[in-house]
Length: 127
Image (cartoon, rainbow, N blue to C red; front, side, top):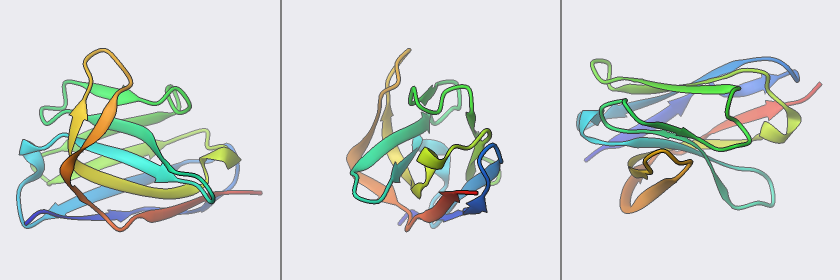
């Protein structure tokens, strides 16, 4: 069974950077497209970004495009979300999920019904 653990969250000032990691165990991650999603207080899940199993397709929400960069290292069984130029509105709990539909030439990232999820990591952007 695939298990995911997010790490790298924390408190950062506006304009700062954080690097989130999603580490997999139990199964190899290279067969799965992986997505990052977030939930801000009082809001539902929001798509952040996703990457195909090969890494050739990467999608971003409009709100983070140009500031966040998603990459994967299948040899290390990890997916990394580099977040730069952080804003207070990026404050949320960030979750990674494996087995995600990655739209072609779009911003679409949809977790499949049997997707595996991590427990999340808190990101707080505040001065």
